[in-house]
Image (cartoon, helix red, strand yellow):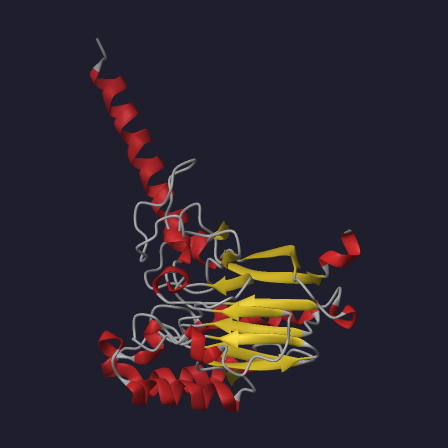
Length: 286
């Protein structure tokens, strides 16, 4: 039998442990950025781009729930990597109607801190960039304008060639704007990387003969995840699409970035992420 003192001691320890976990999940991990560095082999990559750095930022979520100071400090850290190409895979903002003008003012202040890619800086839109219920094209237009002001070329079902590498930008799935075949219509290069926001886009639209990498965001990795278990909440239909490298099929592979910002200031075992890819030509390894 436990004594009353032992029960009180155990209860107090459990309460303290719970408070510590809560404090960590809400105050520490949401701002504990992990910069993930990894190689990205791209078929037919021009030799001039072998070793180039491609920096992926996703889900910045400028708005009332993410600290501007945290975002600015994080983006400033990335300049040390001297990226050749920078891509933003959607959700520049967390749109809130009562504070929309303030929010765009904050976006205008934060986004210029994003390091510029030596060869170009590109982006796509996410569901939150389309306003309430992902249905307000006028909000998306303002996001595109602010991104352009900061030097980010937003690809809306379009592609852009960077030194022989084609970046294919697909618009948002939940907003009903995804057109992968349209985005590839003017493709001219064998080497290509696709940018999508929602990884479900890989399954829900025809992709023609595209082979290669697809860089995505949207999930935030689930934000909270028990150790050794999958996250209980994911905003995707395909629950394999949580975070990191995931094979779609024999031809396509997703890399799902865990995101820089958040919708709710809580992360546990899912640190915010920026990814620094070193582009590699598989031909050099053969």
